[in-house]
Length: 311
Image 1: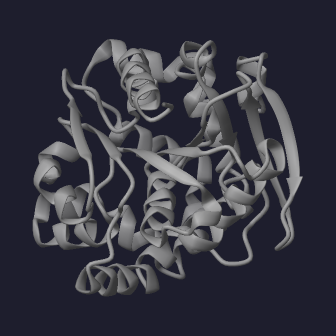
Image 2 (image 1 turned 135 degrees about the vertical axis):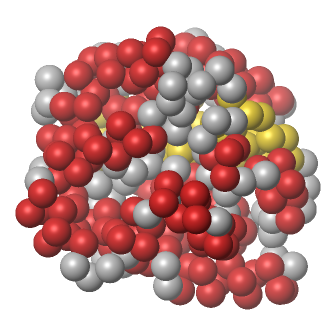
């Protein structure tokens, strides 16, 4: 099932291919309950929308969903620029092509998808119509780079500077993108045996490795990390100095055993949010891939947050 998609596993989803005004195609999937906000669920590295396969069925009866494939990650086209703002606006445009411009949006992003959301939340452009957010297993990009003063964090997050270097795509292709991808999963998955087994269901690793065997996926994802090592950091520094923060109500869901070991997540995020903020650490040995390792907990938290901001 290496070439399967989210719609293969979750057949009630409708598949879309949207032409972006900036060029290229955005592939996505949707489910419309007919009312309420649209939950925009965006995946991270090195994955695809396939990562939401366990959570989506649990939300079916209560939540309208839009699940895009990140540009540059193997299924959607490469973006014209890899920065989070450009990518975020492409995804919002695709969402509005499917649902129109009047439906409010709750952004739900894991890893890189969370960072795209964080950028849009700080921009606070009314055209995006984002009313609330759920960010999974991240701290702000600037805080992530600051953590490199801790040797343990520098080793754990070695891929951040590595992927940002010009030589990274060639080196990864030499090793094999699928092999590199598989190694990352081994490093970042949790210690909970049931969670790891859940993550591996539906041949997920084969699916992700298939995508990352493509040179375009390797170059596109590396460009994402290079952008996060350049102007995006400078922008966050400037935003913090100017007091420009997230205004929308924000729920942070994080792995207590992974991200929580390297960061004081509950202390770091309040410096970046000027409004309602809730941080929830998922324990019991659950790793970085929380929606796949602990889908029941994640679905419950998402439903509570969506219900609160659907009124």
